[in-house]
Length: 362
Image 1 (cartoon, rainbow, N blue to C red):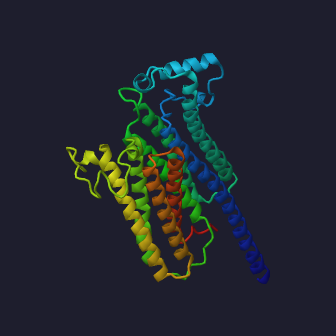
Image 2: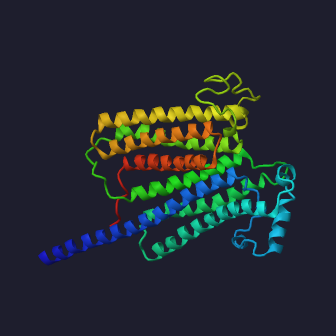
Image 3: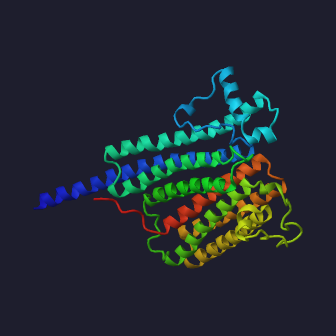
């Protein structure tokens, strides 16, 4: 009887050690995917700021991996671009070399998307078929893969909006494309954080903090969507003063479209105003949450995460103001876009850490 207990006792820890090792591998894999998604978001911002997104006028998920390899192929690709309104109305007379410079941004953006798919899918198959993925993790990981495939389709849906009757892509579709990218990023962070060992705050009462932490995550998503509208309308190139817009904190001509809801999505002034107001709300919310966490859970990791989140939001607000006042220089603007991804990761990771980690399967 003693031997059987000893055998049983020796098997259970071994299973736990193996499963913990498997989780460490999965977390490392998801960490690599997260880094690639951040790069994808930044490269997407560069593609927008350089007006490169319409340089490739066809969607070839497989064949499109290979760029033009000789002069004849470059001229063929350029001829396709010359048929769309962006060239005819904005870039008439563009040289082949100038076309190549915008082509490479869009090609790199699409290639990075394909690489993310490969880096996600092949290890997923390996971990799954070798039994390293617990059953409860299969649906969310498969959901991530499906969402990534959908994002590729949304990207082409966005590009297609600028090929006929427009010189740029629809701000609605651009904001949707950015939002889905950030949703994929947030989901990967959420899953990865749920696989982490307990952080030592088991005795801390986190329930009062969850509501505000959830609210901050939702605010970050709203702000990112509004940022997509700002980018889609080139709203950052207008009203380049702060804190005033058109001479006032609340400009008189805001929300003047008929019907009014169109102002939120189509009026440059209103879109920029909304982006500023939500930024203020997010900053106040992050500071309040940091104080709340300090008061309720002083000295805990939860309090430190809340404080770090507030600092990141403050820095991101500063970057946003600098981007506006400097009239959207590409380096500052891309740093601002990178900052949005960092704030989202911090907010999602903090919220997930306030809940218990995913229990290990027996």
